[in-house]
Amino acid sequence: MPLPPDTELGQILLARARHAIAHELGAERTPPDGDPRLGERGATFVTLKRGGDLRGCIGSVRAQRSLGEDVVLNAVGAATRDPRFPPMSRDELDKVDIEVSLLSSPEFVEFSDESELIGKLRPGVDGVLLFSGCRSATFLPQVWEQLPEPHMFLAALKQKAGLAPDRPAPNLMAATYTVRKWKER
Image (cartoon, rainbow, N blue to C red; front, side):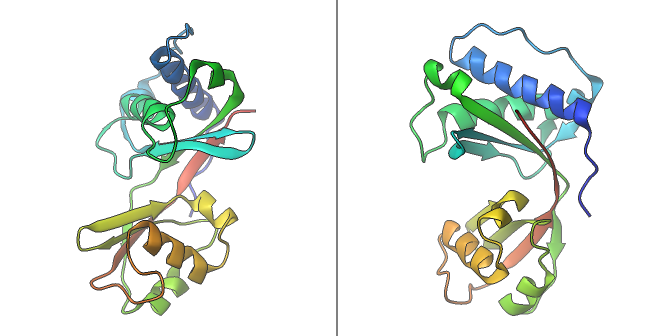
């Protein structure tokens, strides 16, 4: 079940992400006020879009550090270290929209084959982590918007992990999670 939205927390995380990117790019921004929830462990993904197109996305799937630190590091990473894009320029700062996703703890899914796994996925609800040997990949629940058919979703996720999308993967494991997400504008 998706986590309930918390508008106030979302605004704090979005402001913190924007401030972190601005600071990294040398633009002056007023830092957002502190909030005790930022000290709790949390896992976030920060997605940047420019004109509706993906401009960067970096995140954490497990809560290993404070929520405040996690969103800052992932915002800076999405702006400067996503290998699919060149680092963001200072001129782009006001042209990107930020989305922050706060992940629930992943839960492993038991399945005997990929057909059974596909039957257990909840399109539009589940983020999915796949593991096979040293290979792994994740898709946020938002990816269902582009890949609403579960077979296509799983095939694309396998391909992202470096696995053959059209063949069963050896020792495949999966976990699912939900997100609370907030977008600017």
